[in-house]
Every structure is written in structure tokens, then in C-alpha cells.
Length: 331
Image (cartoon, rainbow, N blue to C red; front, side):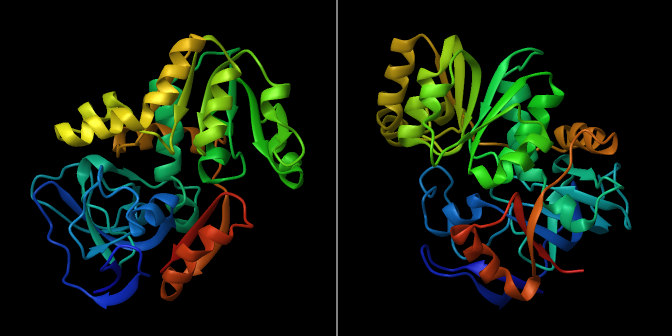
């Protein structure tokens, strides 16, 4: 089958003819009709995560999929050929930039009937990230104040909507040109990052979702109320993450050093910091489907590339200039 593979870190993807996926007893074989493009794909391509997410190259990239079930493993009970599904395949089993992929049944959910394949493929990674940040780690309650950085991005557009559904008062950072669009998604306050310093105009927040890291994360700690929490999805990773990921002692020590500064700052301020490296979950996708089907959550697809232009699609993440997600279509 055709696929776009990474043969060497920091080199472009290239098309190759690769063997058909092996379908295990608990796997679902899916014909890929659309695949979301994520910053995680680019981070893997340049080797940024090779210490905490080691892959043996070559690999097929791609972390989001929507498509139709072709075949199921002998132990699969929840899906059958012909089902339209979507998923974020678990780490070490990625590969949606291809014509077909075998995915663990537990990672898969039926596609929301109201969405196109392209819309559905835009969601799994970013929607699961938002869910795990706001619901699982953040435990957001009605009336709490939540700041979502980079509101017009893939995670941001979904996190704003989900936080609003949870009853939060939602602020976001974005360019002025996106302000009205983000208010329509549910943002109560939009801070223009080009003209305003969010640290000067926001305070007393219960939760911040930070996708930028560095100085932005340090400022985010300072706008939290005592006992508030910042969740970093761009890093730095923490010792808790390293322990849960089962990383070796050397890597755990290196990760502890990486996040030492921000953890000390958080402790001094009386706030919390957690690193989120999202995980696959078909059960959580079903929760997200329910929100979509009742009109509480909608995908934002900024650009669609044909399968032949997968390399160009991944490169488009750098140049930006679109809202929400970029998606590859292979109907």
C-alpha cells in the first residue's frame, strides 16, 4: 500500500510502497479516508521527542484517522466491516499517513454521524488533549476561570468550546483578527498577544492550558490563583510523567532537570504544574462524540490537502495562516 514514511530524523517524509498492516486479534483494520496533521507529527519528524517516544525508523507518521472498517480481529466485538470510525492510534502504533492502518479496538470510536471524514479526522488528538487537560487533570467546575493559550490553533479551538461546556469563564490568547471567531466558539475574553501582555491583564485563574512553553508558561504560573494549576502540553516534561512512562533512570534524571526551574517557580507561587502527553482512548472519544452530536462541540478545519500532498500538508504547519486543523483527504 502507499504510505508516507520517515526514514531519518530531520528529513522530509517520502512516499513508499509498504507492506499491508498486520491485524491482531484485538485490532480493527481501517481504510484511511482522512488523517489529521498535528504538531506532534512534526516534533517526531525532527527528533524532538525521540528520548521519551523512541521509534525505530523507518516509520509511517500520522496520529489521527477517520475511515471505514475493512476487517476486524477475531476478538473484536464492538466493530464490524463497514463501520465508519475515528481514532487516535496509541503511541508506537501510529501511521495514519497511509491507505490503511490496523488500530487497537480500545482506541477506536464510531465516527460522529453529523461530521464529514475530514472533520472527524481533525478531532481525535486535539479533542482528547482538551478532554484530558480540562476533565481528567483539570477537573474544571462551573464558574472556574480557564485560560487557553493559542486559541485559534488545533487544541485551542476545541479546548475553548469544551471549557465553556463545563461552565467555565474562558479567556484565550490570539491575534486580533481571530478575536470575533473565538468569541463565537465561547471565549469570554480574547487577549491580543501582539499588543497586550496577558500577565498584565489577567489574574486569579484556576487553570491554564499552555501549548507554548518557555516564558509563556512562566507567565502563566503568575496569573493563577493560589492552588491553581498550569497544564503544559509543549513541555517541559516532569518526573511524574517520566515515572508513568517507565523511562530509565538516566532519562528520568534528565527530565527532572529540564522541568526543575518551572516546578520550583510553581511551588514558590503556591500553584501546580503538570505535563500532559495525551493518550489514546476510544471511551473518551465516545464522550466527545456525544458532545458533537448534541451541537456542543464542532471541529474547525482550516485546510485540506489531498493524500498526494501529505508532505506539503505537514510543511504547512510551520507557515500557519489557518484556524484549527489541517487534514489530509483520501476519499
